[in-house]
Length: 101
Image (cartoon, rainbow, N blue to C red; front, side, top):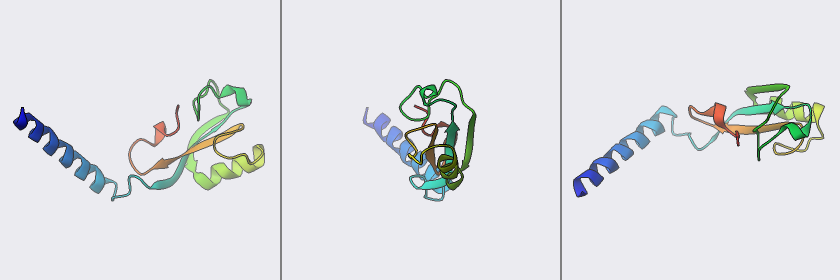
């Protein structure tokens, strides 16, 4: 049992180190890129953040670009309200999943 725990711990440490080096040590920092969703009606959002039933646009864009869309199309009400919402991605491979809940 102890041997199995040591093997598991060693593998976890190696994977963490590999992920750390692959992201340049920045995997908890924001990347400057966001999942940006624009819907026709605010009720098209079905989840807490970006989950939606239909969209006008759904792209990964630089965060300032999405903030500008919020300024132009919405009431500048930020990333969690209105018809324009976004979730900034952290460094790493899963940007397409950011905020999709």
